[in-house]
Amino acid sequence: MKAPRVTLDQWRTLQAVVDHGGFAQAAEALHRSQSSVSYTVARMQEQLGVPLLEIEGRKAVLTEAGAVLLRRSRTLVKQASQLEMLAHNMDQGWEPEVRLVVDAAYPTERLARALQAFIPLSQGCRVQLREEVLSGVEDCLQDGSADLAVSGLTITGYMAQQLNTVEFVAVANPGHPLHQLQRQLNHHDLESHMQVVIRDSGRRQPRDSGWLGAEQRWTVASLATAARLVASGLGFAWLPGHEIRDHIANGQLKPLPLEQGGQRSHYLYLYANKDKPLGPASQILANLIIEHSMHD
Image (tube, rainbow, N blue to C red; front, side, top):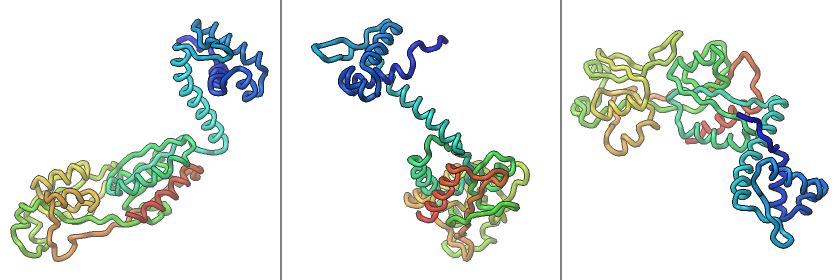
């Protein structure tokens, strides 16, 4: 690919001529001489081989080709300005990217609010978001692939900021045999029925979580898959209340009437990479996650 013959400064000059209504006005806005502005645009047209402006009376008007190229150039100039701003922010210690890992049980609504609030403060910093289950979050912290992490586990060696709780509810399809007993249930009732559990995505020390007393268990990779299977009548499971709200509302799932343990509250915690200090963007995002975790 050949190097561009027209510079960003030339595109900015053409934009100024159009936006300010003429060469004299553009020269004043750019703090340059009118002859310099005129030469820059004339040189552009020569380099491109396409007429960009034509004179109508005393006013310079875009040609059809000029209008198309100017429109495309605005995006180019804007991106270049953003790139320069990002370089300046990086020079000031501002990270180009924050790597955020969250447990799959963390409510999407809370996360979305925090990320939405982060956008106008991000100064070009991107967020790389990753979902893991149980110790998968811990693995990301320990191998250094997470700057910030939200986990329901107490992770040894890391300082934790407690966030709000997530409610897990024992549920099954309304037609499931457990609901047909039409009485309060105990753990002995559950033992002879299929339980659906979520696979720990960690590789170093995968963990089991919650009650696992059923003789038959099917393990799946995601909360969404577990919810769909249980809603279809296959087994029972403890699932996050925010994940199954719609399933309960439309009658696909129904809470099991357990004597105890039918609902469980689990705190989630925010962790930071302990091997490097948080940059300003990571700190802002961490504060927003804390703030928006406290409201459903």
